[in-house]
Structure formats: C-alpha cells, structure tokens
Image 1: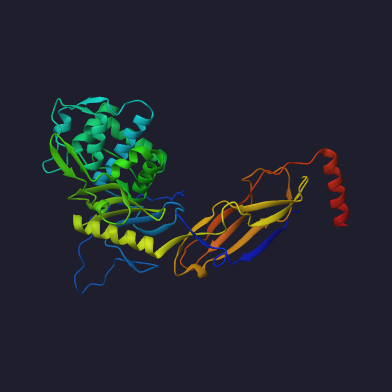
Image 2 (image 1 turned 120 degrees about the vertical axis):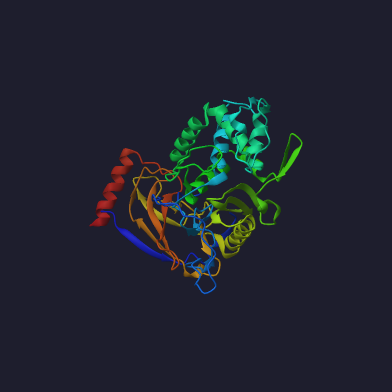
Length: 409
C-alpha cells in the first residue's frame, strides 16, 4: 500500500529568490446587476473604499489587478459584477479583427468601403472621421479602432467581418464565452450604450490577456500614442502611455452611464501586471487611480521562486525501473508574495512514498500546499516527475519483486 509522507519546508528564505516576471483562470463569476459610478463620499461619512487585507484605497466601483506570470489576484473589487464596458468593448472587436488577419481571411491592405451605418455616430463620440464611400485599408481601420477609439472604425470592421454589426456582435459574444467570459454579452462593436450590452472586470481581463498572448505583433498597436487620418491628428486616450510606469496598452472606455474605465497592461523589470478599473468620475481620476494601483502592485508585491527551475525539490524511490530514485519538482516555480510578508508563507509537501515505473515527465506524484495569513485559500502546486522513468524488463521486475517481498518480511 502506498503511504504518504509530510514534510514542512521553509522555502521562503534561502530557497526563495525573486523572479522576473501564465496566468491561471480567475475564479468563476456570478450573474449580478451592474452598478453606477459611485458618488463622492460626504465629509462626515466613513470611507468605504478601503480594501482588505492590505488597506489600499480603491475609488473605482469595479477593479481587478492580476500578476500575469502567476495569475495571482492582487486586488479585487466587484470584479465579477456586470458593468457597461463602454469602449473597452473594442478590446474584443480588435481581437476578432486580429484573428481574421492571422487566419488569412482578410489582409492588412484589404480595402473596406465605408457605409452610411459607420457614419451614424452619436454627436461627441470618438471616431476617426471616416466618410461614406471611403476606401480604407483594414490596417488603418484597426489603428483608428485601437489608438483613437473610433466608433466609425468599429462599425466598418464589424460589417466587413460579420455583414452586419448585430451578427458580428453575436460572434464576439460567442468567442468571448469560449474564452471563459461568462458575464459578457455584446450588442454592438463600439461599446456605445445599448440595453443588455454588458461585461465585467474579470471578463475584460481575460480578453486583454488573450490579446497579449495570441497576437503579439498586433498588440504593439496599443502603445501607439497618436494617429493621423485625413489630416486629423488625434492622441491616444490612454494617458498612462506617456507616464514612466511601463504601460503598453490597452484600452480606455467612457460613457455618461458607465463612467470612466480602463484596461491596462504594464511591465516593469520583466514582470507584467493587468489592471481593470471602471466607474470613475473623470478622465483624470481614471489616470490617477490606474497609475496609483499599478505602482502599488509593482512596489508591494514581488515574484519569488520556490526553487530554481529545473532543480529537483526531492528524490523519491521508484519500483520496477533500472533507476532506484526519481527526481520530482513543483509544476509552477514562482509565487507572488507581499515583499514584507515573505516569511509568513508556509509550505508543506505531500507525496507518494512508493512509485512504480513507467512514469512520464509531468506525471503528478504529490503536491505542495502553500499557506499565508493574507490568503483566504491555500495555493496548491502539483508535484511532478522531472524526467521520463522507463520500466524494467520482465525478468528484472521479477527479481525486484522478490527482493521487495524479502525486505518486507
């Protein structure tokens, strides 16, 4: 019978090293009603924007801050609740276009004829000033969509790929749901207010992360700070691009009903964070909030290795193999921890005491459980075989079985 051994290990000290920053999927979401941007608290009222356990202030009605490499949620506020995504909708619109480009269904130089629908834009909304009958390259429309948040570009691209904006929106929703965006339902490609057009901070994070991972070449458009079309020069509305914080995307959003929001990705010293905030009251507050929370995330937390990659954590005995021992290691080598609370993390290893060949590299033979006072739940890291372990020939296995029986007696 297989026995289990337990070993308490103080990884965090001599064995823990800071790492240079794939993300795990956040927890499942629930279907809830959207919230309007919160009102400024009165002087005599206590603040309700202080989040535990670290006491950080969050003015956004909805927020999510995630470490990309480890998938660790550093900050979460109503992230599963449905919200109006406003122009952050265009993250998914752009994803659909990039996917079509990568699959060869359209080309960057393909010309799109601008319809009258693309010019039916609300007064004062963002656009790239297309005119009916214009012949515009897909690449220019994509730039106008991403850099200057063109609603006209969104509609033109939707009609190109879906025939109608309604059909394209249904395709957007279907693909988003396949990604795991359970709270998302798109009614248009631009993000202009429409009943039932909803998403969540959690879902917008998934779309943002997938864009970064799936289309690295096209993702670079998100860090462009300006764009000129038909002689009209416009600035990117993402003010963080010009600040020294490592921001390279992604998309802002604003309507009177949704408030101001943004999906941000930033990297410092090889470590990337994703931030979604929504429900803010002004463009300045949006920029200030996002900047402050990113600085907090980079400064307060670090990524630390449990053990160096490709270094076995322990050797276990293995039966019916030419080799007597097998090396095992954690499947994930990096954890995100509060820089000042590293020593409060504790780890325990649980593993099988007797393994049988054959084994393949990556086979799970135990687990590492890491706990921390700040965490609601422990982090479970699979313990896996480092290299393939072959099975002995029949006669050799018989001899090993006899030796085992005598040793047992």
